[in-house]
Structures are given as C-alpha cells and as structure tokens.
Image (cartoon, rainbow, N blue to C red; front, side, top):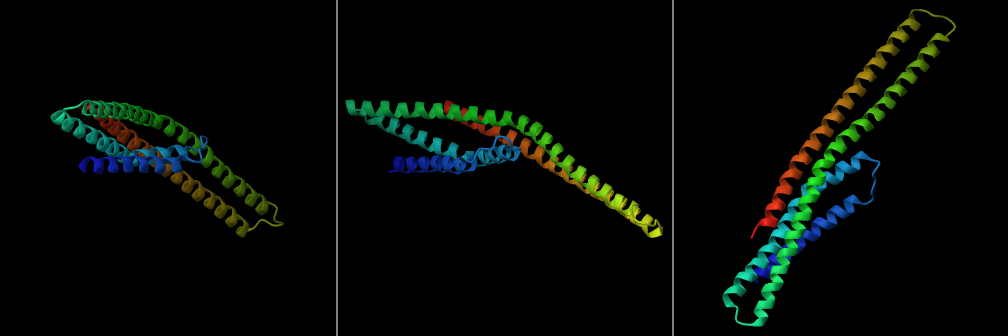
Length: 206
C-alpha cells in the first residue's frame, strides 16, 4: 500500500512538471529574450516537483528491494528484485539528465543577460529617438510661427523641459528593467546550481 502511494505521488509530480513546462515553452520564440527568462524561471520554480517525483519512485523501488531481500524464496522474487533495481538505474539516469539540464539553465543565464541588455538598448534607444523627433517637430512648428514673441520663447523652453523630463523617465525605466533582468538571472543561476546538486545527490543515493 505504501509503495503504491509513493508511485502515485511520484508519477503525479513528474506529470505535473512536464505538463506545466510544456505549455509554458510552447510557442517557442528564440528571438524574444523574455521567452528565455520565462522558461528558465518556471523550470527552476517547478523543479521541486520533478525532484520529489523521482525521489518517491526511487524510494518505492528501494522499499520493494529491501522487502524482497528479506523474503526472497523464489525465482519470481529474484525477477522482481532485478526489475526494481532496473527502475532505480533508470531513475538515476533521469536524475543525471536533470542535473545536466539545470547546469545548462545556469549557464544560459549569461546569454540571457547579454542578449537582454542588447535588446533593452535597442528598445529604449528607439524611444529616445521618438522623443527627439517629436521635440524637433514641435520646435519647427514654433519657429514657423509668423511672429516670435515671449510666448514663443516660453513654448521653446517648455518643450525643451518636457523633452529632458521624458529622457530622464526613459533612462530610469531602462535602469529599472536592467536591474530586474540581472536580478532574475542571478536568482535562476543560483537556484539552478542548487537543483543540479540535488539531482546529482539523488542519482548517487543508494
């Protein structure tokens, strides 16, 4: 009964991990850096499901081997023992594959940061150019007015002030986005290393 419960828990956790991440990965968008961030973050956030699932299945096989070792009286018991040992070997392989996966995710964060900073530079440079173009359009309208008076001069000063304020706002937004990008990458990197170590220890656990 206890073995069946462990198997049920293990399979449920593993299936949940696969389904959640599968629908998060689809649709694949290699050109969008936020896709890498989203996929990496969800993988490390749900990795406990995979670790607990594999641990439950491995524990169930261990319990069966110990029980059969104590009661081993027939060839059938020997076959079941070998079957459980094979299951443990398969789980060990999956644990090692999972370890490699999270090492890859950890290393991927270097690309995520570099690629993300590049995309942020392009995005916010375009916003600054739009502000500059709009400022030039406003200045041209003022200069094309039939008379230049104090009101026109005030309009020029006001337009320049607004441009500076918008520039400052855009730069603050860029700095904030950069901070979040680096922070999340560090978080994913550290968590990936922790999970990789956990799967490594599970693969070596006897």
